[in-house]
Length: 176
Image (spheres, rainbow, N blue to C red):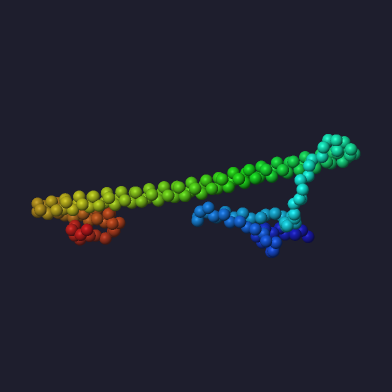
């Protein structure tokens, strides 16, 4: 019966598996997990560098051994190139992730500052319209024009409700 595959975080491994968590920002968490197969964990790498056999050395061996040595050497170089390519890709992905985090942070800051500016501008416009309605009401009241007083009261109430975001009616144009 085949063994069921287990993910690295599901294993009870007491070999000190290291999980590195990088937090470049409070909003982003990148977790790097050791996904080395179980049978390969804890193996020590070769302590010395193995040189490729020279052509003279290869000539002393039989034809089958020559072919096998050349195949193993080729496979080793293929693995090295693949490892180097993966390392370059990893570096580029880390750089890209950091760039995306910085861009996200910059865009959030841009949105927040734009919202604050919009709110400030809307308050300024609403307050100026409210002051205009107060002046119109005052002029209508001084002229004893009842139609203008009613229109001014309605306009004042509407603008006051718009400026504070309220839906209830205000009763006096003299309240601030």
